[in-house]
Image (tube, rainbow, N blue to C red):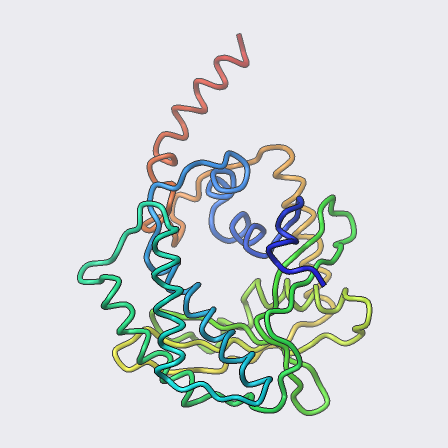
Length: 276
């Protein structure tokens, strides 16, 4: 099976791309995926999340081999990868009072919460499992990676690790687009005929971090809706329907804020040239 890095080498759709267009901002999608605009800033939360994900993945792989990592071991993995991710990030921006060292220290308490409430000791099926499936009608395949797949009772559950600045509401998981996209992908894989359950393991970046398990389930109707949304997004992208979401929740932390401010001026020039 190809790795997620190998799958990304060819044209594809991902949950992140679809979600950016649908739920964040179609203009941000264009800057990121079409125009390949240089990022003006990278929030430190992005490399933080990647490093935390790497630490959780490392722990899960060790669990599969019958090993239990200690907090110092896991924290060392995080610190190493966080520094690597920060070095690779362009125009890294920290919130007031944050630094690489302070975030490394914060991660120690979050990883402690992860270990304290880890419940998957003998039911892990796979970790970092990449997938590639066809969505009927799309010109490119949908790719992604399940953080972890586990067996719970008679069923299968996909697990995704998240870090969050605050606790999730009870309804957030039921509305999350990723759970729908990944459930669709799992069902489309050749040897699966049942929609899996989905569980978000959310570790909060609060003063006293906690791990919360948020379960959700999708229906065939949900997956049908997903496939039609994906088709609509692809059609809109082909027609270059890219508009700024003026009140999106991501505006204050967007990597393309200045480019967005200039969008209407650049568009006006383009339209004048086309008319001429």
